[in-house]
Each structure stands twice: as C-alpha cells, then as structure tokens.
Length: 210
Image (tube, rainbow, N blue to C red; front, side, top):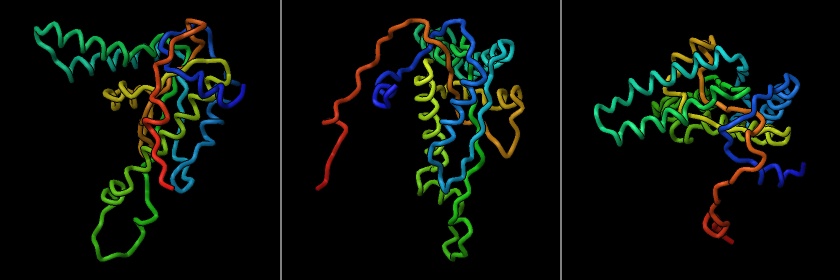
C-alpha cells in the first residue's frame, strides 16, 4: 500500500471483528512504531500487547469504576448520559482483539546536567520545551496507527483509560521507572467501509512565510 493511501485510510476504529491479531503482526507493528523519532533518540517506550480477554475485562472494569468515582452525577439525567458516553468511549477496547498499553521512561534533558546559576529545575526545562516526552509518545503512536492500517487492521488511540492509570499499571505489572502513557486498540474493522470525519482544508491549517 502506498504511504499516501495508508494515511488517507487511517481512521479511528472502535468496532472490530472477532479475529485475532497474529504475533508476527504485533511484532511488525511495534517494530514500525519503534522507528519513530524520539527526544535525543532516547526511545523511552515499551509496548505491552494485551490479547487476553480476561485481562481486557479487568482493565475495562477498572476504567469504568474510576470514571464513576471521578465523575459522580447525582440525579442529573444529562450528566449521567454524558458520563455514560465518556465510559463507552473509554472502554470499547474490551471487545478489541488487541490492546497496546504504551509506557515510557521519565524524560531527562541534556540541560539537566548543566551547572548553571539560574536554579532552573528539570520540571521548568520540560515545560519550556513543551514536554518532549509527550511529543515523543505521540510520534510512536502515529507510527503504530499507520502500521496497523498497512497490515489490514483498524486502530484507535485512547487516552480515556488513563483515569485508571494506577489500577492498570498494577494489572499489567508496569513498574517504575516505566509509567503508563497511552493506549491503542487494534483489530480487523467490523465494517468493510467506514466514514471518516472531515478534515480541515490545507488553507485553514497552513501559513507560509517566504
């Protein structure tokens, strides 16, 4: 598949067929994801591929419970409906053949080693550089999404389950210095064709200074 076709076919897929993803394809997706750029070529990522249905249900239950705890709605029907929507979009991965949990090492900047009189902290440096650790994980997620499409799958990046970060780290035995960062659900799309949300035109997203 040509690169431009892979990019144009990528969409957020949330319904999957009950078809397993082979270990060879899992390895290939991670291989491509690992080719993404990273700050100082640190490659701080680790991919936990979850295909076990029982574990997926455990993660989903943890997310559902945390959402209920974090967003109590009382008797408001409108608020309850919104919370149910949030829960739905944060737990659909339960029925996916594969869920990647991405974890990362804490970012250490080269500037952390400078002997300066400014008293600037690691947190200050990280903020001034607009969190390169987060930018790094974004780059590998995009590679992972495109790799899934190229291999004939659909995928969806998720941040919603992060509300249960501590609980999921316990379930998946992710321990410091690694920390859970994001998720990608993968599988054969339930529908052969799917609608893609309209994207902004180039004219709206591009400025050229010449």
